[in-house]
Structure formats: C-alpha cells, structure tokens
Length: 578
Image 1 (cartoon, one colour):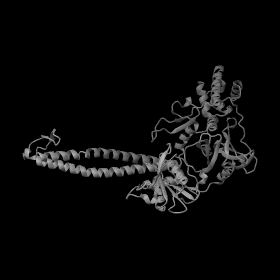
Image 2 (spheres, one colour):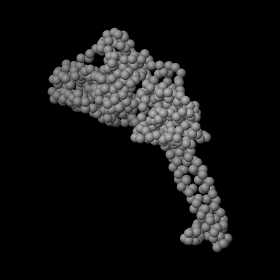
Image 3 (cartoon, one colour):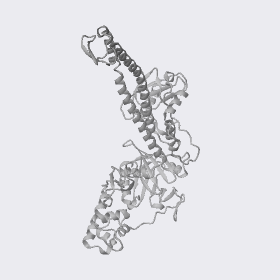
Image 4 (tube, helix red, strand yellow):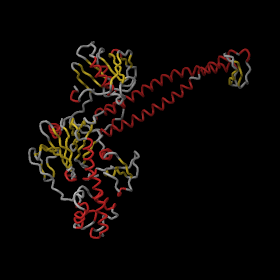
C-alpha cells in the first residue's frame, strides 16, 4: 500500500479539520521508525493520537491503535518532547501535493516544524526551525545528511504538473511529449499520483494504460483531460469518500485481506470488496491494524475474544440455572399434593391401579391428582414428598450456583473495564495472567530493560494520595496493603476500579473535597463513565470483606458510610500523577 499525494491530501484536510489548534500533550516513539503525538483539542475536548511512520509503509494519520512504549525514550523522542511538547499544532501543510507533511508547532519560546517525508525507502522525520535542522529520526537518507544545526536541504523537486493549477492544454501537451505507455506517461507528468491513480484515470476515460500515447485520438485526449481535471477538482474541494478495498476471498475472521486505501471510489477496484469510511484516517488505521499488528493490539484482541467467550458461557449457565430454578419452585406443588393424598388416605384405602384421583382440596375446590397405578395412595403421597424434598435441596444448590455465576459475571465485567482502560503491554500481560491465558498466547517483545509490573494510578491532592486499581489483582493488593482506617470508594452497583484514599494521619477522615475528587475518579474509571450524575459509595477499609474463594477484585461491604453523587471525570492533569 503506497500513500500517494492525493491520498495524503485527504489526510491533511482531515487533520486541519480535527487536529489543527490542538495542544501536543506528549510525544512517544514506540518503534524505531514510528512517532506518536498525543493531542488535545480544547475546542472539541477531543483527545487524538497522530501517527507518523517512516518504515516499510510510510504514512501519517490519526490512529486508535495502541503501542507499547520503551522504558527509556529514544534520543529523537526526547528532542521532540523538548521542542514540541506543550506547543500548539497551528499549521498543517502539504507542499504541492508532494508526499510531505509539515506540522507547524508554536510555543512561547519559539516555534518549530515537524516535517514527515513519506518518500518510500527515503522516508524520514525531520525537526526544523526555519531551514535549520534541529534533529532527524534518521541521521542520513541516501546522499542527504541531517546534521543538528546544519542547513536543511529539501528533496529534489519532481517537476510534475498540478492539474489543479495548470491548463488542460498544458497537461495534454506534456503528456504527448512523453510517449510510451499511457499509464506510465500520466504518472510521470502528474503531481500527487502514482501508477495506481494513473490506471484509474485511464479506466475512467475508457482507455488502456498500456496504449501508446501517440495512438490517442483527439476525442480520447479530451476525455482523458476532462477526467483528470474532474478528479483533481474533487481533491481541491476536499470532496473525499475514503474506501478500503479487500480481496473477496474471506480470511479466518471473515474479512478479506486489505489491498489498498483510496481517497474516493476507484473503478479499477470494482472486482474487490469495497468498505466505506467517514474519514481517511479510519480507513488507513483499519488496513494497517490488520497488516501491521502490534503486540499490544494482538494481545488486546486475544483478551477481548477470551472475555467474550467466557461471558457468553456465563450467560448460558445463568439462563440454565434460571430455568432449573423455575422448575424447582414446583416443590410447593408436590408438597401440597402429598398433603392432600394423606388427608384423604382413609377414603382412598390401599388399592393400587388408579392413574388419577379427584379430591376436594383444602380450599374446597375439586382437584385431579395424577397417580402411579403401580403404587398405593400412601406410596404415591410418599413419592410426592420425595420429589418436593429433592427440589428443595436443588433449590438451595441452584441459588448458590446463581450467586457464583453472578459474581463471575461481575468479575468479567470488571476485567473488561480494566481491559478498555489498559494503555501498556504490561497491563495486558497482567490481565492475561489473571485470566489464566497460556504463556504462549501472550506476545513478547524486545525491551530495553527488565519488565516492570504495572502500578495503580496514583494522584496527589495536598497531603492526600488517591490510588486507582488497574486490574482485579491490583484492587486486591490496594485493599490488602491499606490501613483499616483508609477510605475506599467504588461506583454503586456497576463494574469499576477500586479507589483508595490515604492521608497523613491514620483514622482521620479526609476533607470533603478530597473524597469528592476520589469519587469522581471512581465514577470515571467505571462502566458509568458516560453517564451524568453517578452514585459512589465510600467506606473505610475495615468495613470490607473478601469472600472465601472469590475472584480478584471482589469484596463485600458490610457498612456504607457515605454515598456521593458526582459527575464521572478525571479532575487531575496527567502531570499531576504522583
């Protein structure tokens, strides 16, 4: 998949609409050839992640894919943080439909430009201040060298025609001067396109890309010029309709392998399966998520599938228990039938052979009671008693089984919540270990140091610390390692993280504003995040009890000391995490 200039134009238009004016909150470099900018746009309160890759498949786009970051950020990442972090993305440009994107970042101490050159095996990311090189992801590419504080030399111009700016006559004159196959000639003279779109222009004009340019009639030339102008006018107006094309033969998951991403429908791909997307970034992200899957995404999908499987299994078991419970409720009916037979035993005698008997029940109504002809009335009564006793015993076991399954369902919902909030591969590995996923099913990566276990989220508010668990096991450790007088909070009747407040003096109740901030975190890291006002329960650790054999993260609350109704939100900035 090669990102052509017109596809990049769709990306730039989307970035201007969604990311321009955003703050650069953080910079990461999870892979040697990949940079991520974490963005926040105050106007829409939207958090975005901008990907710049200059590896085997160079590209720039917004992404939802998550990556594991190295323990120590690389030198270029540290350089970007110095010049870009905290700045505003005020300018996004693409020079002359080239495969180049300039990200202009403004800061109080001066601006800089992050230039992404997406030029195949000559791709690079360069940090510039004017024409001065501040640093580059790759120190050299071919004959070009990017020395810090040296002068930036741009790539050699391609000297192609932009159909948006030149006349149709000039474009056709340049085409005729090329000679050779039509498709190759179109790509050679036209800015922003490669062989793929050259073939598309031929198809729209009803021509073969292998036809000699010299064989074109005046009518064919006019048709080709018209189609070319129409396509580029659409680019100029920003009328994009992004498409992902797949092979029609279906893969293991029911989807054909991705073939290409285009800024609008292409006739040359009519034989493929077309999938439309509202934005070009979503299309590119979907294609690369499947063809260049990262360990984080791979394990995330494994865990998602495993959770779905277990949740379905629990729901099926609960449905069966509910059916059995309804059947067990008949113990009262069998008990009543046995009582009725014994009450009329003197009238019924000891004779066998009856299939049923009609008796007056204790309310005065006549009732037909089925009998086993091989048994006497007294033996039939005893059989009804035995059935009632068996169902009563089963009722107790079924109620206990239903409670176990309800706890299991609650536990799996908690795990799903932690999975949705996971941001590092180590967090996913801990969840996989907690679920008992086999070791071989957990992707491994080369890391720069020993893996460190993830820690609870920690926030500081004055002299108070607020801890938020990331998994069931972390929730258990938080409770176990806290003082019995520390405060514990959890969203009411919904899956959520455990939140613990620890103060400078044990036994002292935190100020109301501290508990309120902690309650907002408890609501934010729960299934109620998208709700309005949410009730959060608060109590001291001494009022919690762990049921014997309970799953990680499950506790019983013997006394609720407070209930706070709050808006789910994280009131802390990222830099304020302790």
